[in-house]
Every structure is written in C-alpha cells, then in structure tokens.
Length: 132
Length: 236
Length: 247
Image (cartoon, rainbow over all chains, first blue to last red; front, side, top):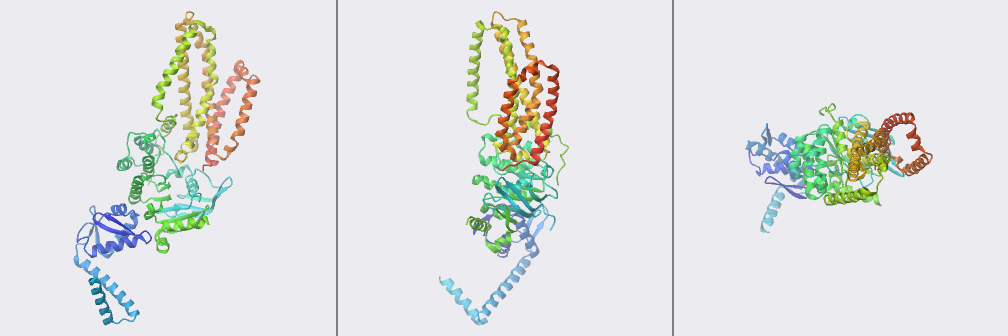
C-alpha cells in the first residue's frame, strides 16, 4: 500500500489488489464525503495515470463508472467535473449507506444478534472507541 | 475480441544447442498493454526479434498485424531492441531527423516536446550523453510513432531512477493519446506493473501462463510477487 | 493510421546515414589531443625524408610509390566488413535490421556509402602522394616538370585499376560482414585460411603480372567483377533475410 498525491487528493494504491476497484471506490468516497466539492473539477485521466503510475485506461473505465453513478459529468473541452446536484450525491450516499447497513445487519443477524443487541453493541463500541 | 495483433502458433527456434523458443503459442490482444515476463533466457528477446523479422523461426506460424513478419510489417511497428545503443554520432536533433526520415508515423513535433520534457541536450552527440539520456532518446524514437504496435525490450534496464520516471511518463502519454498496442518485457515489474492490461509469462521458451493483470491481482496479489514466485519455482 | 511516406526520398538519406557513421569509437576523450600531435609527428617525418631525398634519390624510381595502389583496395574491403560488424559491436544491429526497408535496400545503402568512403580515402592518399612527390622534385636539383608529368602518367593505370576493382572489394567486404550476423560465422576461420592460400598461390604463380600484361583479359575480368559484386549484394540481402542469427 502506497500513498499517492494527485493535485491535493490522496489515494492509497495497493498493487496486490485490482486497480480499477481501488480508483473507483476512492473517487466515490472523495466525492461522497465532499473532499471534492460540488461542481469542482476532478483530475484528468492523464494526470491520474501519471501520478498513480497506472494505465490511463484503468482510470478511464473508473471515470466511466462514476459517470454512470451520476457523480461526475464531462464537459466538452473543459474536463470532468463533480455533479452540481447535491441531491444526486445525497441519493448516491443513501443508496450505498442502505447497502452497507443491510450488509452489516445481515452479518450480525447471522451471528445471532437482534436489532436491540446490535444497537447496544454499536453504542458500547463507540464509547469505548471514544474513551481510548 | 478483434483479431489479435500478434498470434504465435507452436513456434520454435533453436540457437545451436539452446532451444530458445519451444512450441510457443500465444496471442497479444489489440489495444492492450501486454507485459512479457520471465527469467533471463526465457525467450522474450528472441520472440521480439521474430516479430520484427530479425530472425526467422525454425518451425511454427507467426502472424503480426495480419501477415508474416518482415520489413513491410516493420513499417507499423516501433521496436526498441534488447540492450540497444543509439548511433554515437547523432545529436538529439539529428535523431529526431532520423525518425522523420526513416520511421513511418514519426511525430517530430511530439518528439521534440518529449525531448524537452525529458531534459535532453539538443546539440550534444550521444557519445557525450549519459546512459539514461541515451535510453530516453531511444524511447522517444519508439513512442512518438503513430503505429499500431510498440514493442519495448527491457526499456528500464540499467537506467537511473529519474530516467525511469521519465520513461514511465512517456509510456503513459503514449497509451493515453493513441489506441496503440504496447508490448514490453521488463525486469523492473514494480515500476511498471500498474500499466499492464495483460501478462504473458514465458518459461524456457514456452508460455507458462497468461491472463489479465486485474484478474491475476485478484487471485495472486501483485504481479511482481507472482513473477518472483514463478522464477524461484523455476530455479528449483 | 499510418501516413504513407513510402514514396518519400529515403535512399539518399540512408546512404548519408551510413556514410556519416563514426569511424573512430575508441578513446573519445583523447582524440582531440592526439590528432594534432599525430599530424605534427608525421609532418616532421615527411620533411626529414624530403631532405634526405634531396641529395640521394634517383627520380626514375619514384614511380615505385604507385605500388601503394596494390594495398588500397584492401582498405575498402576492411572498412566494408567494419560497416556491418560495427552494427553488431555497437549494439545498433537491432535498429538497423528493423528499419522498414527491404534487405537489399539496406545493404545497397551501405554499399554506396562504402564506395564513397573508399573513393574519399583513396583520393586523399593520391593527393598526398602527388603533393609529396611534387615537393620532392621542387627541392631536388634534378627535378623537372617532365619528370613530374612522367610520374603522374605512370600513376594513371594503377589508379584506374583501384577504382574499377572497388565495387568487388566493397561488396565482398559487406558479404563477409553479413556472414558474421549468420550461423555461418563459425565457418569464417576456415574461410580465412582458404583466402590466404588463394592469394599466396595467386601471387606465386604470377597472377599479378598476368593481369597487367593481358589487357583484354584484364578488362573482361573487371566487367566480371562488377557482375560478381552485384550478385554478392543480392546474396548478402538473402543471408540477412533468411539466415540472420542474432542473439
């Protein structure tokens, strides 16, 4: 795992994992948590490829997927930008939040936790984490 | 999948006692960055020389860009030979003129830009350049060509860190700007592995395995580690 | 995808490329110091010899200098072998053979470049000889214009012979150089033995004098040599195409 800087964004690239997923997931995260703001320009495919030392096609495919997500849009001759629509990003976050939560709940249920126990568990974990 | 750029069928080539290529069958996908990996003497360079018509196979069938390799197909191939040096009397400027005169598809404007980016002295003959500068110059001669196939035999070997970074940048530009097939062999896998789409692993003249780089990463981890592991197995 | 520059003029530039190849590769740093030193050294020797000649020489023997001509074609032969061997030695053979031109084109461009180079070398040597003899005659008491013209006249035949035999020497050199790039290079030491034997018998059975005294046979053989030169070039191209064995 190695940290790479593209413009002012940090990426963690691990060459023992598929690269496409890493670029895609990290870009999604950067956009979802607002590290790249609404309507802001994202690094060009070429810059990403140069700074991460990866195949530009890999970056391009990840960007195509982000476009399908509705998170970014190409503007002819200007580059690629994060969508102007905050609601679109919110919608994307909700979608993934629901996904992750469901995933978590399914696993906890499989371990025999019920909803109240899961709630309590999260609370103790959180306070434990905070007290440290 | 469209027709492969290179297709080898049970190819064999012997140098005296040594079986350099042994019933090699493989394909190189059009538009991909394909790494040809393997230990020294695995047959990588010999394979490239066959593709560029420098040597002919003893048996088997080889198709490059849809026809038998020869000087006609070389019009469409940019080739960096193994352990190559550049003609000593040429300056950077003279080399770019050489490219323009003799190498089809050579883009001298782009080459000039790259030479500036790579900090090559324009007036100095190769004789006075460092090995790294010479290597950068030779790389420019290859990647500044608008041809369907670029073949680089060990573009990083014996080259200092700064030049390697410059060469990587040159390669990334070549890939992003044109839909070319890039076929390269290299020992410095860590440096370049982010570029690979496909990996072909040669061992004793035949294809040990092949696959897409992403699939190999998912299954085995980094390609660097996989290559090391295979080379070690081979030595046992 | 490819711009078709097949019709572009390339043969002349290719000859220029071959002609301008580095002749000296060793001692890059020393060259600039040693060249003038050498020049002065040989210049001094020439002047000393001139002063000795001034008193001693019989000028009717001056024509013997033209015997140099027997050696000059061998320079052409040697540099032509080098033209190909240097590609191998300087690790440029991959670039050369991957050029998108037919093998015969590649070999022919080397042929013309080496022809030019040989003519260049021979001219320099001739001019040097003529200048030298002219000076010697000027300095000596017995020197005269007619002696000088006589000297020049004696040179015409050997010079002509040298120029006529050049194509054969260059193309044999190139063929031999090409063999270094093929599997047959292992047979080359046997070749040199046979080659040496041939010249030994050729000269001991009076080959040279036979040539020089039989004008007709001589010109017949020269025209044969031109045809052989062409065949050798075609043969070299064939070797490169089918027998090249570069490791």
